[in-house]
Image 1 (cartoon, rainbow, N blue to C red):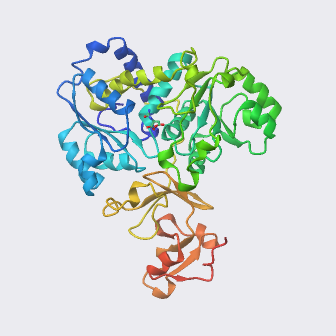
Image 2 (cartoon, rainbow, N blue to C red):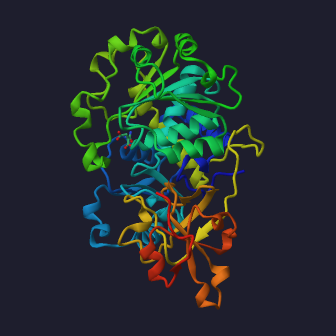
Image 3 (cartoon, rainbow, N blue to C red):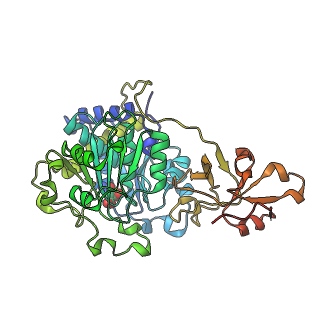
Length: 469
Ligand code: NCD
């Protein structure tokens, strides 16, 4: 197996062995950072950043310079043709003809996939809206491995904005892939999205137990614990334990506490001011005095705002500046492998826990569109050429997952292309919870989100068209 000519859009794009291969090359490179300058000589990297960035862009650029390559860069969307309404596909084709590898950061979820689909050269996702940030996850996993030698079986707590944090979403899937247990400690109202939990359970195995019912006092004594993910082969099956045992279990220690800032730039209008109301819990010396944190690695992708106290900077448990520093060798290794200027042996056999599920695909020129307002597939400049495309991840309730942003949703109305073929009188739509929903073959399925959408295509309501509210 080779990583050459591949792209990294989500953490699913790398097997565990490939991640390990990146890490071993990063180890090798970090021991001789100034001896790598012929690895990518003559190669060009384009960094296209349509959102603010310090660490990600500069560490990629530093990585390419250290490898002896050169960098062309767009550091602000308003200075590129994207501001003139150019599509990502056109930009990708053009930049792909100037550079050998592209790193893109963009506020639209799924933007990196579109660029990867059209560029013709390897593309690295440097963060696409609230979706994923796979190279930050590589730096995070690398740090955990360096400090703890393994990831399997560890207990990692995720803290802060678990709803909009893309570093969180990538890290959740990667931790599950490597067999770590996860404690979810969100700020109120910023819990992990359901579609992330759904994918975690169906594709990565294990169990998620929510702690809504937990006694509030016990909850406050621990920390804002909201849910726990336990791996399929967890010896303890934490989720099965009553609260008291959970407390005992936590005393055996949290291996890492991963803190994130409120991702205000993605807040809905109703969520603004959330962190100002004192609801955003702070990680400080007082919290870390608790028994569960005795040996905890304190991690943060940075930048921090108020959620992580400066008084912790000198604490030996604090890892965040190391995480950022390790970004350079990790990205050097990744770039060299994707460009094929370095090869490392990677076995095909893996111990990854991910179950590759081949979901049926739903793709039509009309009808339902992704309901996520930040999805790349519904943006004005992209709608001209991107066809909506979804994985049918569940039949009851019928659930579609957008292939771009991975948001899941349950459409309201269905019809079949088979039954109405040639017979206009049969061109009927039904409520998704009527008995037809499961009988329509995936290839014949037509999905609508509203009655007006269905009627605009000439479909009439059947007697099963009334949606249950
Ligand atoms: C993160 C990001 O951009 O998602 N920053 C980073 O790349 N290290 C985290 C954040 O902005 O909060």
